[in-house]
Length: 378
Length: 207
Image 1: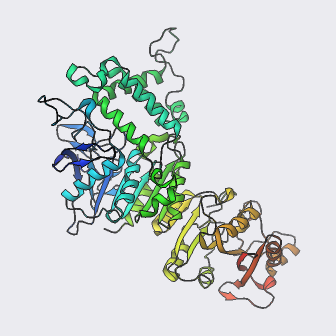
Image 2: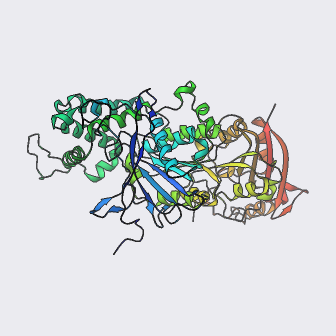
Image 3: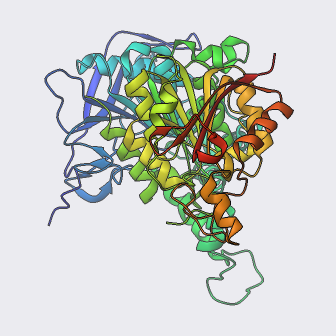
């Protein structure tokens, strides 16, 4: 029997944009494609649209599942659906894969129209994209779908940064921004983690300077390491202790370097799984977008000044055990919003799951989002 | 449900007759910060009655959710650690409604109210109310409508009388602008420290 709170079978769609996009770096992308999914129905006023922005390894597949693979469930399916906190019986929800992605939108593995050789992917030639660039591209998609103003733009982590950027760059096009487990900029420690991940990928002999496609190989070893490192930082010490402790797979010490401890086995498995499905160049681009994000930078480091443009109402959420995007980082955002007199609510959710908490099903967390969304006019 | 000492969310479970009294002092359209805002009903009342732009500060998860449902702005945080997330002089009024007596850092929060708000509004149960005095005369800690807890489970750790609070303000650089004393929904003007159950003060930083 079908789950009545699932949006059910979904089908990705694709939109092609021929107008060139000038990126923050100065590079120009001559036309691009964005793959997206939608759930629920757009109302006559087109006033009930909610844009979901994805995080580092996310995709446009936010909710529901595919007809040919029922196990391929959207990454935020516990949040979005009929009767769920972001209720698709009220809202028209859009998930979009960002530029530079590896799930259908134009990215490093896409064919580069500029190259002389037919069928050659961008590879290392794909320009560095920023959160601002993603928002610019998402605006094109909104226009394409006839949406002048979103009821809400929502996201966790890097997705929350996009929600913030929307409110700053297109203040009249977003009524509410849901900024979850995010930060107004990365700390040096965060950039450090990202660089280790990038170095793991770039020093893999199979990386070939980003042009591994033509060599018929994938820098799996590097990508795997990058993911293993990332994964550690998304969890908390407590949740790892609770889930794995010092448990041994065979129960005894083998005195070798195989995956003896359960945590080793788990991380290696996660790394392998990720390396098999994700593009190494995309991983580099996504981490770089994280590093560059800093709306205060153009305002002498003053976030309150940077937020002057914002007109939206804000919901800011953080999680107590999230040390990668700690509650303190969210409180900085809240302070800057308060300084500008914006309507803002902030909750610090008790959770042991670290940064990944924003993806987890937690009653209080979901109750908060539900209550916030319920009060939102469409 | 009993509140713990660190949970200063709703130290009183009685219906709060203080909303209209506070609203009478708040200028329309003002920026208001309500400390220990509970379920947000005062903020909601002030928003509807005075068109204020308000924010609550609250620590308790259930109250945060109730604020969301009430559609008022709320910032989760612990008042005991101050108001560092708020700019000096950024609010017209900082309200501490029936929460003062449950705070550990009484001096600290009043100091912060004077920093963040142009004016402070405080309400608290008057420990000098004659029935409270009488119960003590008979050898028991007072239990009443305004002080519904037993001595062993009360969140109210810093109870005071009108006289105590006025002396406190004098010592801590707070200039009292207005006082209102109530008993139920009646305003008390005669012998307020004896006949009033609930006290309201509006004050500013001593210039």
